[in-house]
Image (cartoon, rainbow, N blue to C red; front, side):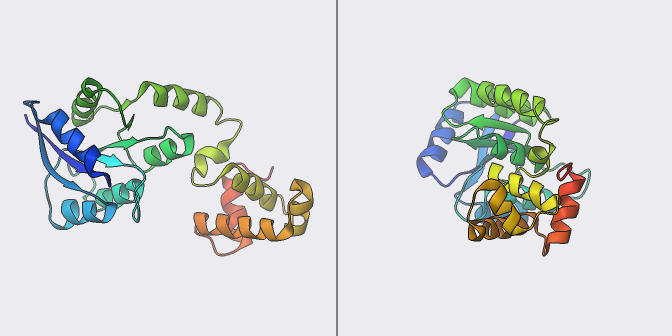
Length: 220
């Protein structure tokens, strides 16, 4: 069986390096590539290019790798043989890794991984497995061991630590003025943070934000 690989990365040199790494691998074929999330969705959803594994950069200008993966997954019927996604990034930031996993990624490798590790990871993902760089696996272990202490971190990976802190106080019923006093911040700064939290949670008012936060265990 030949594994059809589709590359998505905004750096041409990185894509060229991956193509070169797979050139002599008998059971792999690079069937296409895109330099943005938008182009990846166009090729894989609208042009219906068939792929078994998508090597996807997490951070790209415009549509991120996580958002593109969600669009590609949504285009397939439940139970359909959708392509599996192996995320690649220069960072092992906890929140970014968890956001990728929550969106449906089947693995997460750091760029710069040895060729043998990359080839092995693609094969593992193609065979319905999951794979992570050793450093990512170690960080995930520590991350999830702390989830019981910070459930909001798993529930809201898109929020920064400060935003989660402010959301917790909002869920306790604190006004912006009281939050500012509590955290020794300017009230204007708190208002900006609250606006960012609402936008990231896609809620329109404080009441909706409180419901989301309390469902995640905040505001106790």
